[in-house]
Amino acid sequence: MDAYFLDWLALFFRWFHIIAGIAWIGASFYFIWLDNHLEIPPDWKEERGIKGELWAIHGGGIYEVSKYKLAPGSMPEVLHWFKWEAYTTWLTGMVLMTLIYYLGAEAYLIDPTIAELSQGQAITLGLSTIFLSYIFYELLCRSPLKDNSITIAIILVLFGTVLAYGLTHLFSGRGAFMHFGAIIGTIMVGNVFRVIIPSQKALVAAVEQGDPLDPAWGQRAKLHSTHNTYLTLPIIFIMISGHYSMTYSHSYNWLILIAICGITALVRYYFVLRHKKINRPIILAGSSMAIILLAFLISPKQLYEQPTETSVRVDRAQVVKIINDRCVQCHSSAPSDEIFKVAPSGVLLDDWAQIENWAPRIKARAVDTREMPFMNKTEMLDEERELLGLWIVGGAAD
Image 1 (cartoon, rainbow, N blue to C red):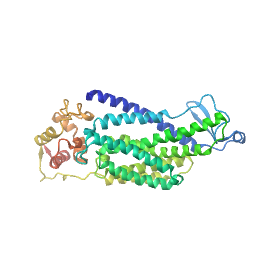
Image 2 (cartoon, one colour):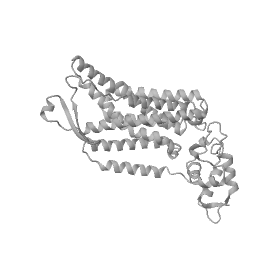
Image 3 (cartoon, rainbow, N blue to C red):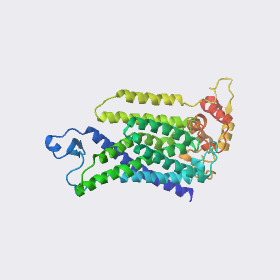
Image 4 (cartoon, one colour):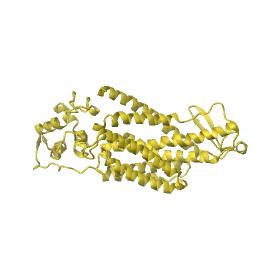
């Protein structure tokens, strides 16, 4: 398929994916907030089987919300379900994975400097990792350990760390991060499809048929819903991580991935506690300090020295030659690259004015993080990066 139309397909499904994701995460956040803000109802409501109530104001009106301990005596004619947001988010995400990382495996997923894989091998490894990881999670949640939340959390962190390390030693940094996100997304939608919705259907069916109600249905659904709420912030980070190469292109990208997932899950924990009127600012402060420390620890190591009077002078001809040899294949008004037919991010380097204009970005992407050229497909040398660094920080001569 023509690259232009593939880009339009990717745009449509990315847009659709974000819209569905906002709806899913918004509903998830709202119901966790709702559960944690329920108050003891008056006696007459308790006699009707109501567990908690909440009053709220929004959009110019006042709402009264009640939650039953199990279910009402009879089901209402209209009962709203929240499931298609989750299914649509996962389906559009997998379409995006196919369009970008599987059809474009040689450009986005396979990095020959990490592992020599064919397109078929990369796709098979990617899909196998996603679904085998979900099976591991399901078995863990059905094991005798299922009621020990701390043990489950420790095992999942250890498993995630091994998984992140393995993925980043199979695929490109971006490809590894996206697959880790796909694993989280699959676990989350699996929780909805295989646990939360079936439990709710069983509850509704029992009410309609007059059968005894089993509290385990609601308890199991609530447990997996809670798992999902702690996974939301990590997966949002992964969704936007492709724009920030200092994370996925770092030599310790697997550790950065786990650290940020852990920090963001901890931030979510802080807000869950706040819903319950438990204020632990130390959690939020500690998370903020951890992000700052992480940013400091992974800051790029300088390939060049700050220019002095005796520094090698870098003239325009040297810079232009490096850009022409290593960059304009993609970053041009008429790219010659077989994959990128439009300049990525609109960065054009056809003339000197454009090169000067994009100098800070060249420093960030080609010199500091070494993300560019993309997977170093034009084989830019360290010496060339050093010359660009010297020119950008002030050593250039016209």
